[in-house]
Length: 258
Ligand SMILES: Nc1ncnc2c1ncn2[C@@H]1O[C@H](COP(=O)(O)OP(=O)(O)OP(=O)(O)O)[C@@H](O)[C@H]1O
Image 1 (tube, rainbow, N blue to C red):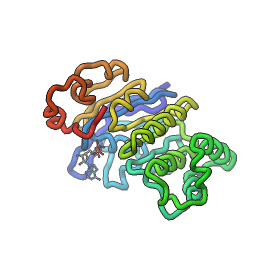
Image 2: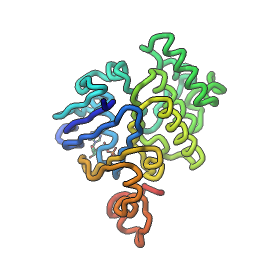
Image 3: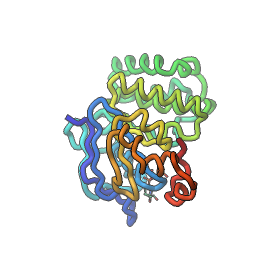
Image 4: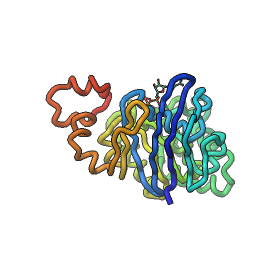
């Protein structure tokens, strides 16, 4: 059974239709990538799944979202976490004034004590630097360390599905590579991942399947290896074989680099 399914999802922010009939699935144990230009609806999709849309005055106007066959659309965000889905929003929003340890503890609130202790051990293994900085204020960490903390905090709830919004954005290449390796390790330990990532090469190397959103709809989908080999994706999203950069900027894709 598919772990996470999205069926004919329509999302509005007031009069603005952000998603218009999006369907996708994240099979159990897989990494699935969502690509697309600015404003295509990637963040909105993750918000809809995690139940955080309402904090942005958005609403699911139509469609269904289910985790392991149980509907989660219309369910409050805290209940979605209890169903096994956690969301790491764009911009690594850690609690800057709290220590690293307090941030992690906050992620484990609502998790049974034994599970939280197990998750804490796992986070320590994945991110030794967080253990070293346990008593530092989160706001003093580097960008990459804050991203590690944001992911670590989400793992404290022992999710079966992790939603990641642009986890490598703004990071130096070496740190971005470390985060990518960590995502792979998290997935290998059994967590499914729905990954929104501006670096298409990184996304397609991590994912087994990918969807390309264009103005709120799925424009293209397929196995990641097929998309990476497709001329259209290579030209438009990876900038490979592109003679003039004009096409990239016309498509609004200039942020994307291989
Ligand atoms: N809180 C909001 N209120 C109103 N409109 C919004 C809100 N958030 C997003 N939108 C609109 O919804 C559409 C989809 O935006 P969304 O942020 O989901 O796209 P995105 O693909 O994640 O882009 P980005 O890479 O810039 O984050 C855009 O037209 C955007 O302007």
